[in-house]
Length: 168
Image (cartoon, rainbow, N blue to C red; front, top):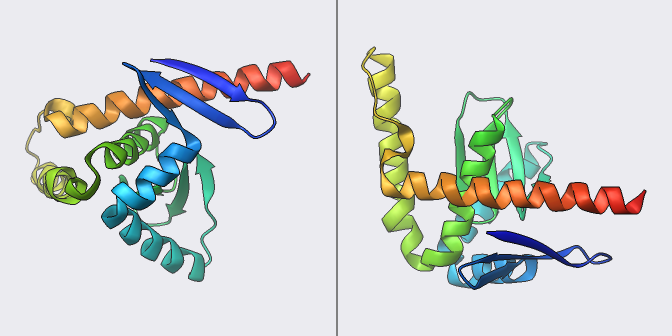
């Protein structure tokens, strides 16, 4: 995956992976139209969080909310919700789910969203019972989210550093 900053002033980026280009505007467009189901849920969640005084921060191409509850993370379109002190790995992973939403669109909820939720609950139950779990990324949709999110965010952070170095 390569990361190319195409326009310094507007902050428009392109991610190129196997000839698939993902600019910020394409990400938003795909999230809102192709991935409309998850994005609609995310907008409702974001409104609720804004009403309760939570302030979003930008994280990659997404809007990230932190909540006080002990929560790993959840990705709802271009809205990411994590517990306070969530690791970079968790936030990158959730951004990967947001990228998956752009790929799977209306199937995201059924192919990845619900199975991911069930798997997370299952893992938590086994953990509370003192049972061992397989690696969280051992199932394809979680491993894919981690891979996509980590690659994307590493490239995003590198481009941000390069931009900041050029501005000095």
